[in-house]
Image (cartoon, rainbow, N blue to C red; front, side):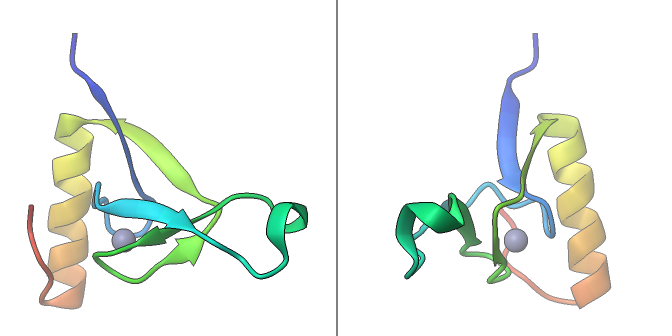
Length: 68
Ligand SMILES: [Zn+2]
């Protein structure tokens, strides 16, 4: 069985951390992607194959980016 990864919905990076929002618990939990700078509530869960596909797609779209 393949392991699942929680990755950035924008670039597919697994390098995602919690973001502290000023309005605290009322705002709900948000995440920050260290790769593309995305901040928001959305993380998606994918297998390693889909994770790689997303990263390639994002890399092609942005023309740059760190690849892990
Ligand atoms: Zn990202």
